[in-house]
Length: 421
Image (tube, rainbow, N blue to C red):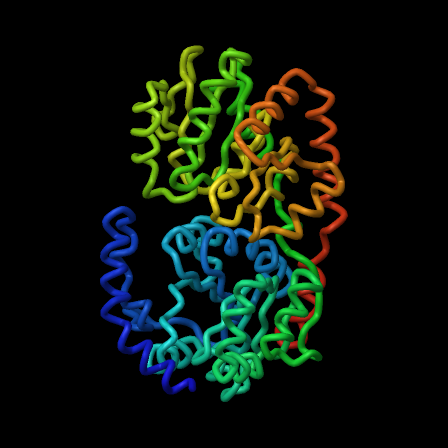
């Protein structure tokens, strides 16, 4: 089955390259570093690395605290972080700089995987969340490289898909030493698609161990004082196509009731910054771009954050935050950063990717889920007029985050046996 999979992957390579070209039209970073996607490197790299893979921004951000803990405990260890997307790659470079090695993960074709492994000779492999690559996993198994899946999550939809190809997935999972699932439901689903029961444990979600420094909080407070003075700041984070239009209409309606309202929009993907700016202008809203460095005037409507890596700081500069990807059927995004910063959190009905977190935070009345535009408007007005209500959400949100922390320590303790080799 894996041979058929590999042949099919080889046949799809031309279409994959066309897709990279297509994506590069809006996101130019996709047209660079193609060699890395085939494990063709222009320089030599250290070997015997501890290797981590995280797909994109969300997974990369969640991985950083664990990587930093390993660096503190084992300063002489050589670490490699791979990513799949340019945005994820940019965050690795921005945060870790030269303290780790970094390349894109190569495509899961035998020749590329073999070159990658010969280049880095990883002594252990740690994969974030749901990535199952049959050739990569088989290479680790054949060469006795300890392979872990950490912060593992698996939706019922994905599990159903994997169950249709057991001849491919079961051998891949047989190469995994341990799977650290986020929840018991995730653990059960991994077992159901072929993972050995004894290799699967529930160690929690490392996204609860979010790292928010006092420096970031102070930067946010300063930003609000200098750029947003006198405004009631409503941050819409990680928005997707068609989502901004919803909030621009809502903003117009709420503005009549909250004259000092300022809408701060943070698009999920940087290639959409210009598109969102045009959308605001089409709605006859005055826009200030983050990169302009300009102060928001009393008549400005939208502050567009056209930068990357500043979301925590922007949360700290806001009075209320709505986490996007949840008003359109994307599946939601991480609400824990906003809660940890100390910002009241709202989110929409589409939270399939963060189902357990959403259910948990709602059980503790630590956030507000809005099913439609009307509920958003009512919630915003209620939060605006009642400072005690806002503070209650802040306090309950921080408690919710603290109560669920500790996954990084548990995962570190699991990995240490192979780190020490």
